[in-house]
Image: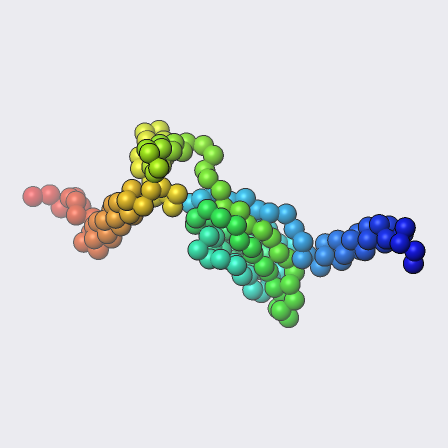
Length: 165
């Protein structure tokens, strides 16, 4: 083939490749999930296995063969792949975990930052982008709060259950 036809051949090959990838479900748009939020994903073909490239960024919960919930765990980009019962790939998605767009306030102090959720009162939240000391303190406080809740549940709530004294 003469060199002058190379651009047409390249365009035809790229078009054929795109059609083949689209038909196999190997190419799809990115899914945007806010950090600490869940996004449903409805699959057009039943899946037997669902994999996440980096489970530190996002996690999945399978609710059925065609319904998956994606949880944004920390900022970043990963991918999600769905396989059918024979192990054939039926879908692939990019997953972008992004900041919450509403009710979040970020305060920058020097080189660090602290994040608040303002719904309606501003309270500190655990945010992996916060400065190390502030992040560590928020994780420690969240852990202590969770432990208090588990302790109260184990002892019946710690309050007056109507028995009176």
